Image (tube, rainbow, N blue to C red):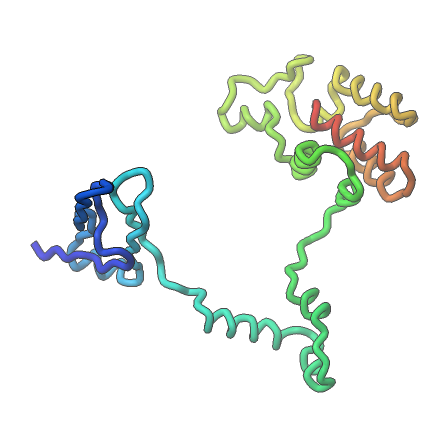
Length: 226
């Protein structure tokens, strides 16, 4: 039939009876294929791992080692040479690790709402919920209904569609909660739609003082609870 066994790395035996006395080892598990399959997977390696709950060893295919030490060194060297001012550092004989770190760092686009999370003393899971809302990734009914995970997308407090903008704070019932929180922290402000409200909080977050810290924490916790 032209079947061949795949070469493996690791322990030779793949099964044992796991008995404290009279232990038996055997090579039961193996990978066998024809010549065409071996040629298609010529760059893969069959690794025999330690057995878990089962008495059989785990078999794992691993791809080619693309990130060996030599390639990593070459890649880092290419990045360093491409840095601005690298030649000047070599000529001056001084290595500025801070400058190199800044240049090597992947600069991601800054977001306008990052100031809300600075010195924000809300609970971690509340800040994560606000972060998801800022990315428009909250599991609202409108979003779940779009993925056919629920039957309807109607808000629980009214008859409108439950979207992010509706929750914060188009819905009158939920807007009243945020209005009460604002009154409680002595902040004279009327709740608006999500985009206007988040822009207002961003503007306030750039100021200093204990009132700003309280506002950011109150806004974060309100979004989480709603």
